[in-house]
Image (tube, rainbow, N blue to C red; front, side, top):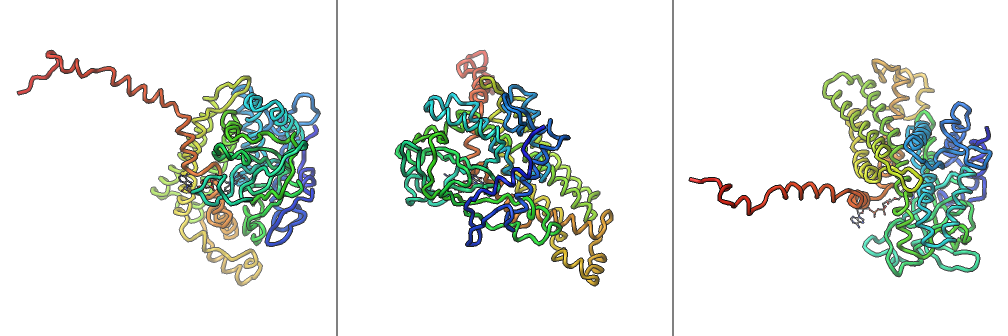
Length: 495
Ligand SMILES: Cc1cc2nc3c(=O)[nH]c(=O)nc-3n(C[C@H](O)[C@H](O)[C@H](O)COP(=O)(O)OP(=O)(O)OC[C@H]3O[C@@H](n4cnc5c(N)ncnc54)[C@H](O)[C@@H]3O)c2cc1C
């Protein structure tokens, strides 16, 4: 059965994109030491879905095509299809312990959700709606790996976006019969070095007068003038896979994207000079709900992985059976199940939007608020459970190569259920997940990828059924009246 493979994806990244790192042009990202292993991990996702053993779970065949593509592109029409699609996403997330946060199913979910609400784009203009529908066809049929930049670079938060220094925030600087030209920046382009295309939009509120900032579009990563400024590569800083098992392979990268007068053809412009439509494209369609539902699915895997790390940590230092430690593990397990239960709740309490099944939005936003708060707490519990074990480690694999040092490692890295080599191997995974620069970036990611707390709680407030909650209070109060209480028959006799 024909389906995109890892080799095909990696080859597609050799497209002449302009990526900068450490003051230089990176050239081919598939071989550059800052990116090559992470690129291979992206390839691994496609090889996994193309494996005949996984192809039914992971892919489906869109009507009128002869190639299967990832299920993230599928638009569920009922609960069962939604759950099937979710299982495919969980299977992908398990390949990296949930540490590839911006795997291709995230953006596919966003696009799928937006297309489910194509009526919103029709109101904005038939040409823009057609552009989005055609883009969905192109991206899904080619099983593109997409990333997005929908947030403006953090600058002077006390000023409106339109008041920031010129050329900071990406905006339309020109347009003609062929399309629009954009200049300025967006952050933070996670996975952009390993993506085929970038979806550019504006999720933060805009006001009248800021029309030049109010657009959305899609561009190939190799578009002329599109510059990717990578952050520090944790992969490049990794000593070996044994020393940095996660950062050496799953450093999906984040980057500032600078649009240096990039021309976007009209057939790839979805929102044009309309501040309210920038909001509506995510919030009046199921786009925002779908992209963040995927994020919670991915987190359900990651948090279980962290819980597994916690248990092994206690085995490594022999504390598992101590009652206070058991209590901490039990509490962690409850938190993992809470994340999973919220995900199941979003699905079970979903609703139809036209012919499509959509997860329960308020349950999804509640999960977002609670998990951005939960993640650093879980990391702290792991630190608490481990003490100095995470630090009392050989500096690198090279210590094992020296017989004298290897002997001392053998004597000092003791555990009841692990050999010294197994113990060091395990503790290096644990440190990479929770304490390394890579692990620390993950805490920042989980706290902020969906917006700061004031943003996520705003979504929670907006989507909660306040009428039902306050209605119960009103009903309670309507069951008694002051005048009745004051009626002579009801007044208690006081002495
Ligand atoms: C690792 C990582 C990866 C990311 N990847 C992507 C990506 O791929 N694509 C993308 O588009 N974006 C990405 N982002 C950006 C992310 O969406 C933003 O960081 C997030 O929306 C928060 O915006 P901000 O960083 O501007 O923080 P702010 O909104 O400035 O918030 C920072 C803090 O400032 C305070 N604050 C600011 N404004 C207010 C206010 N009005 N009221 C109250 N308090 C306020 C709060 O204390 C808040 O916690 C990524 C971020 C991180 C950390």
